[in-house]
Image (cartoon, rainbow, N blue to C red; front, side):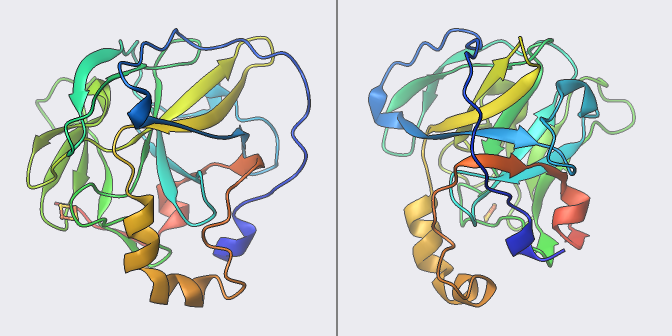
Length: 235
Ligand code: FES
């Protein structure tokens, strides 16, 4: 599948949306609003939380055409968390899980160290399920480039490795009335400016129309990481 066909943009239907759990941000510096996009499945239908297999990594692009994010169903309620901090020292609180079980979380899939991220060819960063003997309701986001490990249950904070800050979180919203999911912003230390600068040459080949940094709006498709990247590195 060509990357260009991955994102489907169409008009976002109007309608009241119930907000997810209350957000208690400690600093506006680390929350950025982007267009609210509706997450949809392969058929362009609203993505139902029940469609998301527990402990499996899904990917969607947001807030730009070429910036991938992880969507995870952690299979248990995930409370919010205070006291996270960006590399610059801006402190913030994370919203926790959303959805019927409050188990759905999303993060930028751009590693906060040297920005390894899923591409069509390979992904060095992925959700790693619990191993034998581990608590089955655990799991980490692991970057095999240089072994940064993040905790998806705790706002993407760094568990180990060289990453200087948590993964940027994607602010999700669950519309209970219509059983639909939306992304509407980011929280934490974004890497997008560096991302577009450092990977400019490759992105210009992948997006010959020069629209890699086009902000998304409308509907955005969510797919399993296995369909997004041909090879998923394990470590
Ligand atoms: S790029 Fe992910 S650990 Fe270095």
